[in-house]
Length: 162
Image (cartoon, rainbow, N blue to C red; front, top):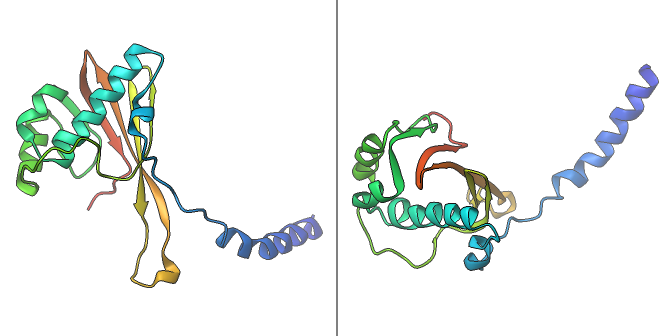
C-alpha cells in the first residue's frame, strides 16, 4: 500500500508542472445572436430577458427599467446585495449612474445556457492578482437567474462576502 501511494505521489509530482502550464485562456464568443438562439421559444425568450436585463439594468445602470425585468419579490443570493427588486435598485443606484444602452452586452460573454426556468450567463474574468504578466490568467464568472412568469425571480453568482 505504501509503495502504491509513493508511486502515485511521484507521478503527480512529475505531472504537476504540466498542469500548472496547461491553462487555456477563456475566450469570449462575439456572436451574441447565436448565443441567444434556441429552437425552444420559451428558452429563447428567457435568454433574451436575462440578456436585455444585463445590458440595460446592470451594465447601463438604468434602474428605472428594473420593474420591466425583475419580479417585485426578487431573491438575491449574492451576499453583498440585498433581496427584493426595490433593495436591488437602491443598492445599484448608489454605485452606478445611467449611461447609454449598448446593442450588445459589453462584458466578454462566453455563453448563455437556458434550461427550463434557469438561464446562466458566463463571462471571461481576468484572474490576475498582480501586474506581473507572467502571472496573468483568465477564468470564468457565472451568473444564474431563475425566470418566473416572464420576470427574473432569483439570482446566484460566485461572489463572496466583502
